[in-house]
Length: 217
Image (cartoon, rainbow, N blue to C red):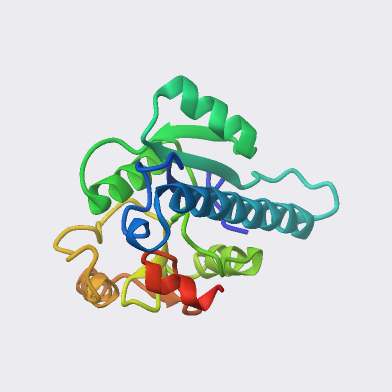
């Protein structure tokens, strides 16, 4: 669906779902054990949607034509390389990579740059906290990148739940107040300044704080 030298990459950023080591902002409402269980379930949900999207892309290519299929990448934090590889194998991803150190913007930028260095036609990033995520959302993102340089999935809290790019420069991760309700606004401003054609997907809600659980109960 996205033309280029190498297969497009869908990268999920995920933290190992161990009690006390993930979703700390959920802990006051549900406790460490349940917060970890919620994280594990959401990670599996997101990757299941990604697998369905990949099958749909392969079927759309049709006719036995040779195509570069979507590559599913799990970018992990919170565990070592061997444990991360075992986790990725259980989850059925194609590759496991390390997120590396630094804040959210730096870690996302690192994954974008890695994908482009590997020759990916496009790189789309998502988190592991999206109970509303469906395969159609991901298909829409890759379709948007056929005619836009940047795609964003607006989140209900003023951030975004997905970002995708076709080219490595310029970056849209610097000067962002991460965790605030201005993340999407600031990113769109950077995109306009860089004259990036931008497509917006449907608004989705992530699950980050105890109050967010009310929507899913």
